[in-house]
Image 1: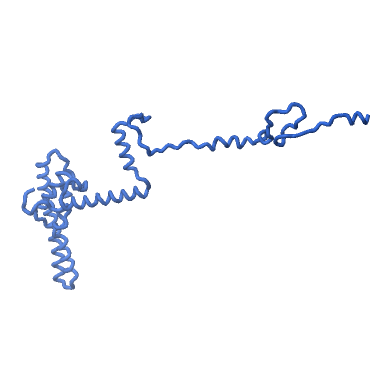
Image 2: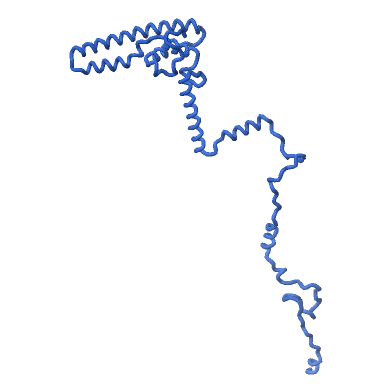
Length: 237
């Protein structure tokens, strides 16, 4: 028995390749040993690998070939103009919009002041526009009006009434009555004549408020009137 065991040939196990490959002498030996690292490799690395591939970046600043198609229809001229106008008129921020409004308001006020000084009909306020209002202004400016001296006379009468002298106080009271009656009579005559002239000159135009507009202008001193007088005294409008 001991001899039989001694005569059994010993099998020498020899391993080759990387750890984890099949040892030589046991069964069929594969030609190409497969490493264990390849079998148990993480799938997360395989999923992340394609994302590392960089996509080619195209330069948008490169000039386009004029013969190449644009890929979109050409807009109409009206649509393009309206789009440019909307982009130009759209403010970037609320601060820019407020600044633009202030500039536009300042420009409009400057034009209005210049129009009031020169009588330019394009930029006058709405209450001063129109041929009817212009004729009413010229009619008042061409006449001598007692009402335009009301302010200087009122100052003189007020000073006289403050002096502690009965005679001057009585004279001041009498002057008040004379001035008021004279202004009322002059305004009635001016309104009647102006209404007649407006009916002759502008029979089909709207004349409502023109007489009151002229009478209010007659209460102002000639140098302080706005728009500035465009006719001289005695000149027919």
